[in-house]
Image (tube, rainbow, N blue to C red; front, side):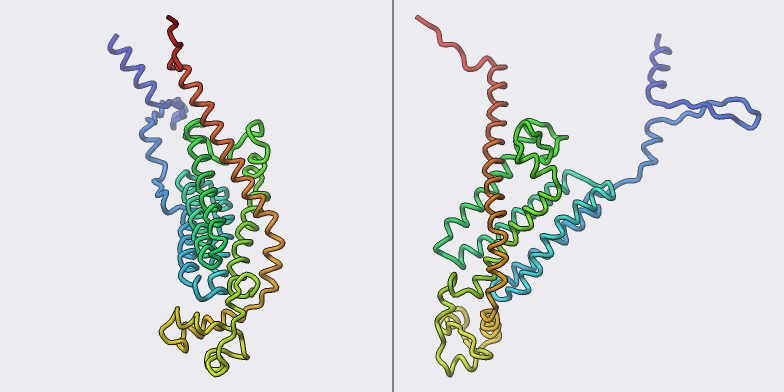
Length: 309
């Protein structure tokens, strides 16, 4: 009996194949599961190509934040490249078969943080609209967190947050499963906020301080070609209004507002749609979690029936 159990264990742990030897007779070639596992090379998840692209996105985003207060062109370029790499890491994951849960979370966290940092700057650039930008930050974080948690709790750890069934939400299913829709929506959403950022340096309509002219003698020393700049604002920001930083701000204020207005106008409807999707995502995830709570409470016999006297 013991020998039979031992042979069964050996059969479970090994794969037997008949291979002809030099004499033509079949010989048993035994490969254990452990030996087969040794043929699989060890992977460092943190060094997979999609994740390396993700790290480069973070570096570019940090660099854009460094240049954000005074260098709108450099900041916009770095920020835009960081956002565009979001599509490249997804392509790399599919091409190299390197899709990982760590990479998916890294991608989402990077998206949320970069957008939030830009909205924080817009809150300071347009104080009267600060509550609106703060609300967008709260909606973005809450909807994605609720969606991720609901997917893990109700769908299991093996289900991706992008696998949304049409029966649960048609708009979320289209948004997450159609790569063209996903990329276009996210890209134009970011384009709108970048356009607002550039308008804070170039549009007197949104930044009335740009209309205030400096004293002619001071302006001649600070500016080129008579660009308007608020010298009192420079004195608040910099001890010396003729410093290199003040000169850079003066040059930044010479930006033309035409193209930022064009980008803002084109991307605004898509940005508004993205916020609607965030609301739908938040509501659907909340309902999904509530459905799970109802089933769990019923399994526990809750709510208990009240005893009647």
